[in-house]
Amino acid sequence: MTLPTRRSLLTGFAATFVGRILFRGTPANPLLAQRSSTLAAASEPQRFRFTDIASRSVFPYRTNNDFRGRKYFPQPMCCGHAAFDYDNDGRMDLFFANEATLPGLEKSSPTFENCLLHNRGDGTFEDVTTRTGLGGASLGFSFGVAAADYDNDGYDDLFVCNLGRNALYHNNGEGTFTDVTSGSGLEHKPPNVLSVGAAWFTNYTVWTPETDLRCKMDDKHDEYCSPTVYKSVPSRLYRNLGAGRFEGVTESTGIGKVLGKGMGYCHRRFQR
Image 1 (cartoon, rainbow, N blue to C red):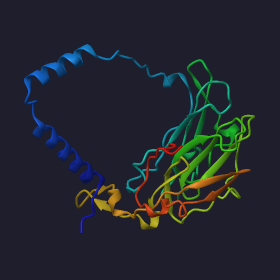
Image 2 (cartoon, rainbow, N blue to C red):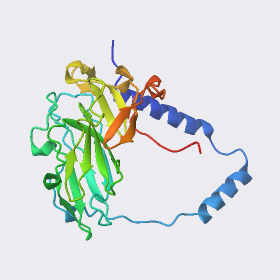
Image 3 (spheres, helix red, strand yellow):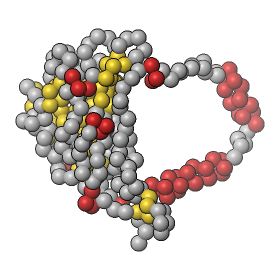
Image 4 (spheres, rainbow, N blue to C red):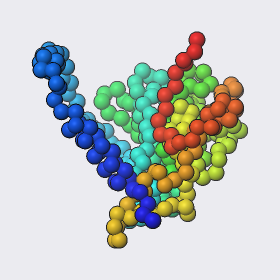
């Protein structure tokens, strides 16, 4: 049996979308069409221009998914990032997650490390990964990131989702971070679950290099498999107990009953 691939899934979506546009045709009411055209012309938005200034800063970070011919399922999934003011100087700094070797799932060299860039305030950024302790050499394949002040000390902390253990970093307030995952209650996670987003946090599926499926474009070429060939899993919810401790409440809140492949999230108070 041929396994579905990402390409076949996206092709199907595109065909459906184009078909709906063609079927819709032109408006039956010419007055309505004229009015729509007039309103569109009158409300033409102001145009903004952006300039790429990345070259003004010097830093070694590049996303590295260790592609060497074999197409592993997680490779096309991009890494997460966070824009937050880690040192409270009033300027937004940038954190980028990074991937790892496959099938080893190790950050075996600095080219796989996560990266924190400090905003200098003059349009340039400085790589401060090493001195802040956020390289994540022990984390393996990293995905989503969340920045928030979980202990109300006035400094934003970081949570990094991984294929393997997740990590909670406490902002020490003097330019460094400490991995405080152990003992926080966040170290407990179902085995082989691929966590990709955090608010705090979503799971995607169960995967290991040993269980990776090989999908084919044709007899000679591999293709990345569609997510539909992998198991759906629940996201997880942790309640902040204070004092650096979290309690898993996935099952008691009913979230554990909802299976899927979570990649995004939205949190909002809907009851007052």
